[in-house]
Length: 514
Image 1: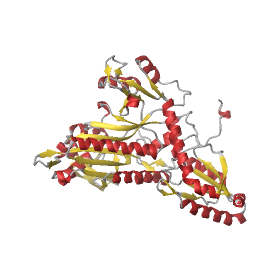
Image 2 (image 1 turned 180 degrees about the vertical axis):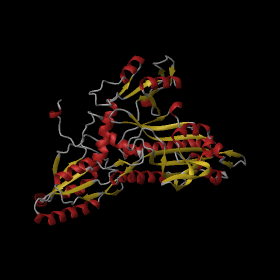
Image 3 (image 1 turned 60 degrees about the horizontal axis):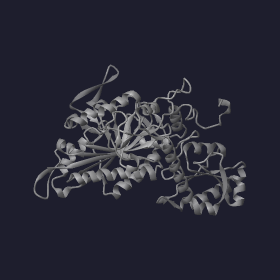
Image 4 (image 1 turned 180 degrees about the horizontal axis):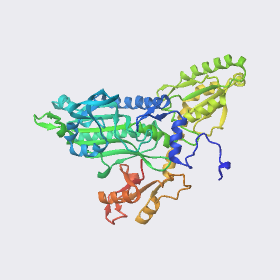
């Protein structure tokens, strides 16, 4: 198709033209975030931050419903704390930002760091070690357990190659940290929180995920076992959207978290940690956005219904605005997903068509256009973001108000079902090495300016679990085991590893990833 024949879209380039640039343009067009003057860091703009606030609100409620409480711990972590857990410091050492001085002095017109610290401080990359120091003080007896703590915070990981929301030097997240009297309780907690993440991803983000265990090579540094949720993006790469770690007694021994058991014995606690971040917004973009911009799942959209007054004559403005404000109040009196419907009347003095396109690019689930003629019919023209921008239909005011929650849920379900169908379409079961390698070979680039061809998808293949084999495949194809599925309907029965001919307990999910 020639450029002249392509349909007009709000985003240039399109997904098919250049996926990486499309992603950045969606963020820009939706006014979600922008790069800051600090290398690798981002400014989250109001629409993007409102999305994150809704993520926080829902997840915070889910955490508290499972017995967790919030606390806050220092941003700065002594280097000696990280050194206590060898695997942990090795895993994070290359990403750490380190503070070595505590003030600046002006010398020859320049500010020079002075006052060297006795011990360098790491800017929080994750908080297992600093929280472990507090847990060691808080836990004395089995009666103090379980200790169920969550923290909402920012973290710093000094990434060399960054991308808004997906990988930045500083990002926002929550990190849960818990301590238990037994291994069984800690494992139960690990799996419970994995389930919370999966429920949130699917019911609120409308993003289907596969729950599974990470291989040893992909495990969180210092953990005994790491579990994750993995989602397929529209370029068919995987996104790790959340992780839950069973830490065993590794961190408890490093931080000296001990308690007296009900039998009078002194034992080390069993701990877990789990977290999701602003990467979820990147996941929302790459799961649902299209060539016209962002598509917000209704349950998380900052504004679920946007009312656009269409006024061409000044004398019509007051009565059209009065009608829109009255409709706003009626819609806000309805509830969806446990909260009042979020409605915004866009009364800016600009063309209705321009306003409509701005809200399409922002991904507002429902647009209502109302002009003088609609007042006479006591109705509105409605556009749904899960459908094309020109697909609008009239709807009576009474019907709109009475069915608004149903319409929003229908959009939510449509987004989820569309994403699930896409994942199903591009997931293949493979049983030979030759087919596996051919499947993941990069397709030819469509043009010289396109640095990111659309990737193959997910493969379900048997694997003998050998870390050296996984490392070779990663080196050959940039493909890794995303997870060992918990759901036996996905992992299937034991079989034969196609790479070695050795026995395999089940199929695993292979993919290229972010």
